[in-house]
Image (tube, rainbow, N blue to C red; front, side, top):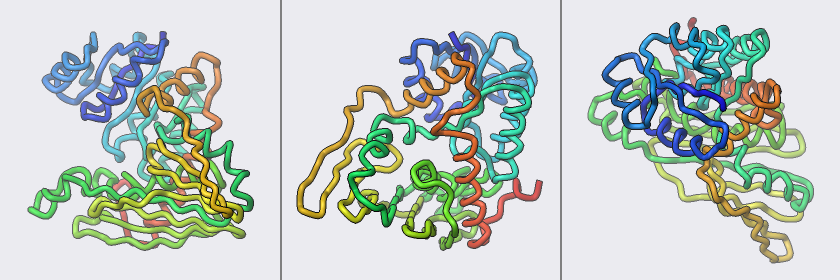
Length: 328
């Protein structure tokens, strides 16, 4: 059994635990929160036998093998490096950190300490992403990747009333690109590698983060277009266009329905059945790596995480989005 602790007490940690409990080797050993009251309430809610309010003590505990981090983005690197320096494997929510400098420091810590570090990008480990990769040659020569994730945030209503919650606060390294755009970029990087060029545009809110944005990426003989938003909704699918056909993906962040529409009019449904929660597959992969003595995923790899973050750094540079974490 791999004994896990969790950092973060919001809905995403609950969703993670619901999925993780379906993986045979998973055991919830503890939860961490900064306050005793919150830690105890969450432990009671999710059935954790132990709580921590001191991250150093969690890192030093010999009763913990691995930690799932779902704290604010700005805290990911500092927390992960401390844990890895004490021999803990780390599964860290997307985005892996605030910027590429932090990602590099996290990768160095993982390699130095011989532990697994993996970004919890669920979509690229789901069965339908394997289906996308498997069927990609049917499209012929790929000419364009189009991905979008636009979801109006309930917290935007509070923002318009003058309350800046975490989702729109640069102190936490947040915003549309970091929260939703990453879901468009990470699969692109896994499928096509690092682009030659990046051109970004965004709507910058008064708080200093982006409310929505779009990026055009140059791959030489193909291009990619991604757009993302926390202040509007979109009902458009994502799409990979080839010379022989196009692949229509219902939701790039959780692909469930996928069709290939060939140039001759044929339509092929290639979606794989989903019999597990979306986050199950990232936990399964992470535990498999630990049990097999591997240090990183071939799909959610250190390189893919770094390349994705480098694209986001450049997009932020072009659009004037600066986080306090960038000054550290």
